[in-house]
Amino acid sequence: MYLLGCDIGSSSVKASIVDKDSGLTIASEFYPKDEAPIKALRPGWAEQNPDDWWNSLKDAIRGALVKGNIKGSDIEAIGISYQMHGLVLVDKKMEVLRPSIIWCDSRAVSFGERAFKSIGDEQCLKHLLNSPGNFTASKLEWVKEFEPSIYEKIYKFMLPGDYIAMRMTGTISTTISGLSEGIFWDFKDNCVSSDLMDYYGFSKDMIPDICPTFGVQGTLTAAVATELSLKKGTPVTYRAGDQPNNALSLNVLNPGEIAATGGTSGVVYGVNDKINYDKRSRVNIFAHVNHSDKQTRLGVLLCINGVGILNSWVKRNVAPEGMSYQALDDLVATVPIGSEGLSILPFGNGAERMIENKEINCSIQGLNFNIHNKAHIARAAQEGIVFSFKYGMDIMHDMGIDSGVIRAGKANMFLSPVFREALACVTGTEIELFDTNGADGAAKGAGIGVGIYSSAKEAFASLKKINVTEPDGLKADKYCAAFEIWKERLQKMI
View 1 (cartoon, rainbow, N blue to C red):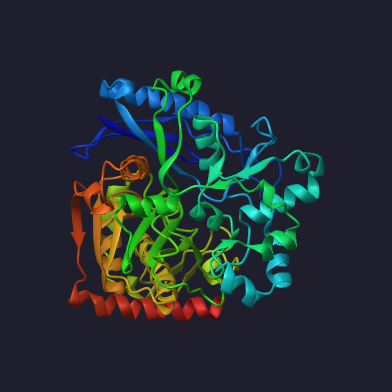
View 2: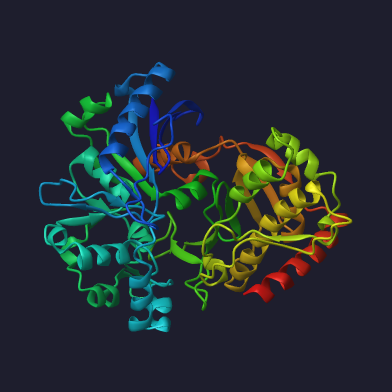
């Protein structure tokens, strides 16, 4: 028998089928094969049609079943991972009222800023642990302000994963983790935030019923089971946003454990067992998948916009034409630690929350025409990305998160030996790489939710390390010295 994991991304939708006994992934598929379109009717806007997610999911599930030669009737439970912070609106007939305003849409920034000031910085941070920012609640306020005819028809607002679960089961629900990522949850009073709901004038009737992150959240209807080539009554037993789910996929559930990604942007996601916040709101804090009123488990999320996008820019514009990423990594390794005084601040992909929403752009500092060449720039770029991770992790450290281990999938920036070495040395933390993804993690989450696995430890017993990078004491001092130079240059910019 098998478990099905569904990962609803903004670029594609993926389905993975995991054997419940071995814990191994039998088959995976994703759609669309070309990157999914994002509509930007105005600068800073980003929308997607929820029906497109659903249609891609149908194709992905059918494709995975065919690849694995598996019958839909052998799927025992379904888990859902999804792009965070999106807004989906439906009427009483469960029909979508407008395209989803997704995570990278920035139209609601001013609404969140006004809410932060009006409710009060201290009140927001003590109760919501975040500024309302550009999250789901502020996006809903934008609709209320500029699309009142649509707002009047709203029956429920949802996150993208809630929408997929609704399509599967015919019921509308969400989780505490989901409400927290939308900045609707009051951690101090352990309920939906009255401060935020009252300030924005939202009716609590629009809030979906709250269901557990792990557990039966509904079952497939007969019609939907036919659409998905599955069996009627298959339970949906797990749901989480992509970053909490990525942490689950890497078995990051307890204090001192950190999950990281290094794609176009980079994320460091640490687990805290204390209700705490950064007074300057430079990181985001959400309920982790295993958070409860009896056990505090908060995901502290640091996002850095300019990560893989900087490395790819160097490959396209600085490295010799046609150079592969592997060859670029080899070029980087020819330059000594610290890039002989050259520093790159990797902040050229929009405003960075880590530096208090300033948009300082990327800068190259310490360039000497007589010393530095393409290889130095390539190395300084990778080191600059690493140092931005370190800078953010120091903020997390001040909140009480001491990194014991960093876990990541072997992909993107974590494929670079220099990147891994630099990150391990400058943070003093062992880095463990695994061959896993969000859809695999969602499938195992479903196994926990349906009771096939008694614990996360059992669910992820088959998770194997494929690479370990330990701090090198002989190199750590050099990396730390280079970081201090980089940090001083950053602080002059902000």
